[in-house]
Image (tube, rainbow, N blue to C red; front, side):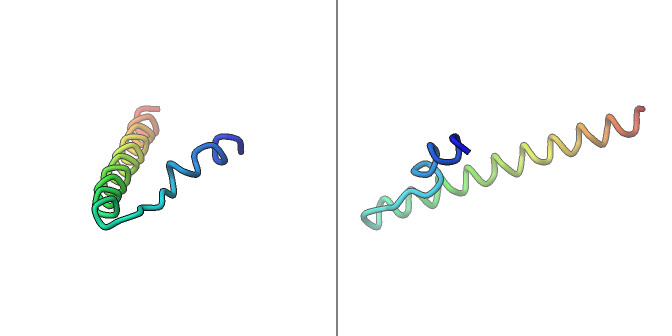
Length: 53
């Protein structure tokens, strides 16, 4: 819960102009790709572990 509170500004930044909004869109896309990649890696590891045991 504390981590959720402390990362609010990181998770939901508010751009003040169009340039910041565009940069924020790129950051969000990178963050989304990172989350998807980590999720896929975890799923692959779980699948490998399930098939080998």
